[in-house]
Structures are given as C-alpha cells and as structure tokens.
Length: 324
Image (cartoon, rainbow, N blue to C red):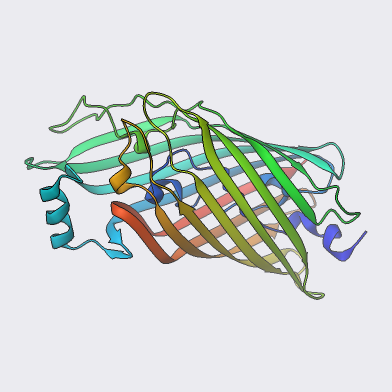
C-alpha cells in the first residue's frame, strides 16, 4: 500500500454535492466545499461510510458585479425594471446526510440527502416593510457514481450521476406585504430540475508530509419543470493537507465556481449567475480509527455576480463521519 492510500481517509476534496438552488449567491455558498474525501464520494477504500454535516451561510451583503452594491446601483436597477425588490438577507442552514459505499477499489457510490432551513427577507418597491419567508424541507438528493480503476493506486477518477427533483419548490412568502405570493424559484429548497453531474479528479503526494488534490465538476439541467432552468455550473477545486501530525490534519483548499444565468419564464436571468473564488482553511481530527470530526471556514477572495445578488462574507461547515 502506498503512503497516500494508507492515509486516504483524511484527504479532502470539493465535489459540490449540496447545492439545492441556482442563484449564484445561494447555490455556491459553501457548496463547492466537501470536507471529507471518503464520505463525500472519492474514496478508494472499500466499505461503507456515513457523514453528518452542517453548513451555515449568512447572505447579508448585497453585491453588484465585483463589488458591494451602491445606492446608485439599486436605484438604477429599480428604475430600469431589472429588479422589483431589494433583497435584505438570506440565512441558510443545511443539514446533510451522506452515505458512501465502495464495493472495491475501482467503483464507488455516494448519496447526499440535504435538509434545507432558510430564512429570507426582501423589500419590494413601494413597500415600507419587509416581506419574509421561512422554508424547511428536504432538498434535492444527489446520487454520484465514480470509477477510479485506471491505475493500481486509484489516484485518478471520474464521476457521473444525477441531482434529482426531490426538494419542495412551491413555497410562498409567509408574512409582510407580499405574504402569499410565490417565493422566487432560486430560493426554493428544490429546483424542480433533474441535473446531470460529470466530474474528474486526481490526487497525489508532494513529499512525506504533504498531499494534494485537484478536481473539476460540471452540473447541467437535463429536465426542467414549470418554466425554470437553473444555470449550468462548473466547479474547479484544488487543495493540500499536512500529514505530519498523528490525529490532526490541517488543510487548505481553493474553491472556484462559475455559473450561468438561470433561464425560463419563472427565472430571474438578470440577477442570477456569476463567478467566485473561496479560500477555505480547515481541520480534521481523528477521534478513533473509524470516527472523524472536521470544521472549515470559507472566505471569499473574489466574487462577481450578475445584476444584484446577496452574498456571504464567510461560510462555515462542521461535521462528523464514520467508517463502517
């Protein structure tokens, strides 16, 4: 067994298996990060693994282009009709169950089941009070297969799978002047679309104490519902981990995403889509041979959004996973 494969349980990679929505500021926050290599679907070690993860994303900064939206940006958008409201805040809490099974070193299967808890507030043009929504629902489930039998070490692999339309997508605003009107499709727990997911990855060792990975993942809708098509997304991720300690593994990732505008009669193409880059430091701690805990912070180092969109100043992820 190589040095890398003997410690593969601690490696991290981003596979973007969580995102239930399609507006860039919402779908990309924390969703390009996947804190555990084995339990998020890129393990070459046979067996069952279970991951429980919590992500917190507080979108409290209204942005335009690559900067913070100014009063002039907002006034222009309201005047020309590209927006009919000024979004105030969106607080996202994701609870995700991940189940991974590898029958052998070449094949593996990964299931991600998210539960979405989201609060949102917006101020419509002409209103003096905010309109609010609170959505709680199972999100869109993802099932990803992988094959990494191209070499004896299994250090190169491909991924292919589907995002299924299991999340609820018919919520309405719950209070305020706009109560009872349909909630924006990009803010629903589910998109209503079936998406194809394709990926490729590679990992290796730099020296005795350092390992690395690189990965690309593409997601595109192949079947849509009720006039809404989420924009196609491409995630590019790379990272390193430091292996000199016995049970503690510091890690650093760079997570990048580009997403196209949403399309369809119920979409908001003027205010969806964009590009972002996160710097993501984290730590994994082995409690015993089969149990690990982890935590990550994502810090945006570049954000470009189309139109006006809410974005976070930082994201946080914590989790617990088990090898069975």
